[in-house]
Length: 157
Image (tube, rainbow, N blue to C red; front, side):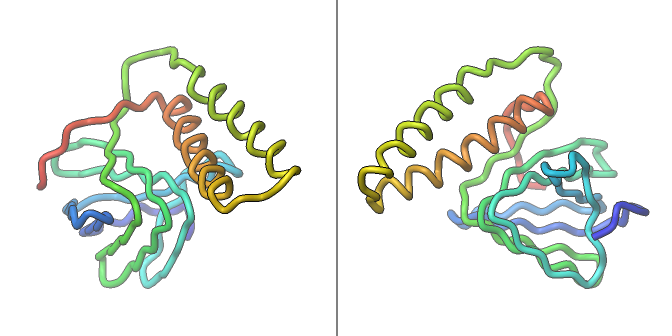
């Protein structure tokens, strides 16, 4: 996974509800939040992520799509990228908005703090599940704000 020449791929994404999307002649990158950079995929690779934001640039339509994936795996082989993800479809595009509301992130942080204090008293499986989902939502909301993304309607290519 290097950040060098961008390769063109046929990309197939399958979501949990059997939605399938295809992108042809496209670049794909994923965002490493800890390093604040986009990284391209290499040929003949296998990668897996708990939460990740990918950016797909369709060279035919010149459109850029952003997709959040949960518990996903990617196989890159013969200029094809196969992605399986355990979330519902969600496709975003860049927005012209300059300011995004941070209220959602504040609410998520408050809920995470509540769960943290409650877990000191006793840990429940339900709390762990809610905490995991809140962490995923926070990750997603922070990147939506950072890249000024809005959800877009999508028609299969």
